[in-house]
Amino acid sequence: MSFQIEEIRLRQIGMPLVKFFETSFGRTYERHMVLVEVVSEGVSGWGEVTAGENPFYNEEWTESAWSIVKDYVAPRILKTPFTTSADVAARVAHIRGHRMARGGAEVAVWDLEAKRAGVPLWKLIGGGARPEIPSGVSLGIQDTVDDLLNVIEKELADGYQRIKMKIKPGRDVEDIREVRKRFPSIKLMADANSAYTLNDIDRLKALDEFYLMMIEQPLAHDDIIDHAELQKHLQTPICLDECIRSAHHAEQAIRMHACGIINIKLGRVGGFAEAKKVHDVCQAAGIPVWCGGMLESGIGRAHNVALATLPNFTIPGDVSASKRYWKRELLTEEIVATPNGTIKSNDRPGFGYDIDMDFLDSITVRKETIR
Ligand code: OSB
Ligand code: MG
Image (cartoon, rainbow, N blue to C red; front, side, top):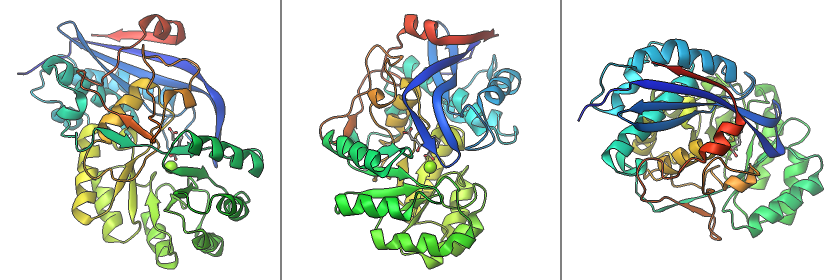
């Protein structure tokens, strides 16, 4: 049954993090995300643009996302009917880059279609391989190694299945050595967010000693070739994040042996249709995937839970409980982790949660309706 989007409501919201999050490219204290609400016959689908506040993770940021969705994405998806959400990506495919902005609208249409059909989003996208997704945590760079050890202890006590620590030059080998000394048998990995070059090959090789599950995106955000070179010298599998913006990139990276694992982020690849393609390419090649995060609100978080029910998401990802990020979630019910370090998907239509509209209004800093 085809459907038509009559109206798109854009909002920018501001949500302070419980604690700042530090990566090799800087600290985030407060998230400003763009939410996309697509409306058809009185039903609303919701999506979150996962771009950061500055163009440091990739080229997108809150402001560019607002303008791309408003001026380029909205006019291409309004008023002309869709038979399936799988067709949304093609309508906006000739917009170069800006996949997070395109993706924020794309996932909203999937949510809308799921709600109209009365089915959970995970079912509509072909997921449901597992009722609970394995959950890990991503820890920002801490002020001291002692702080890091304490945070890890707490997250493990809460049941999380895997610890990812952010690293950068000067906060790498020695920090990881201390973590391994204290926690010799945990599932541990490191994420460098592109902080190294091939000149650092000895430093990166030194990490092999700590039998990490993987090292995530050590080299430049757009350089698959150098990662292939580095992988030849490392025992530790490389996991690509920033480099993989499409299924085609995944194919190329796999063909070149640039990585052994891929982190899939809905926004980075432009939404569910492309995320499913990346998933399928990896599955066919025997490359496991996991679901990455971008410090999402409950809306993006719930979309991530749906995505991670696809079969090849076999490794614990970065999708964890709302309370690790927010004092108050914008859903009427928080997303929680079980004591076993899993997050349950549910059977409610769409992304599976209700939005706390009063709270949402109170944190909205900009709003616009496009018809
Ligand atoms: O590289 O995975 C990353 C957060 C912001 C930007 C990039 C990354 C991250 C995270 C946090 O690692 C994941 C999360 O907890 O949502
Ligand atoms: Mg990463």
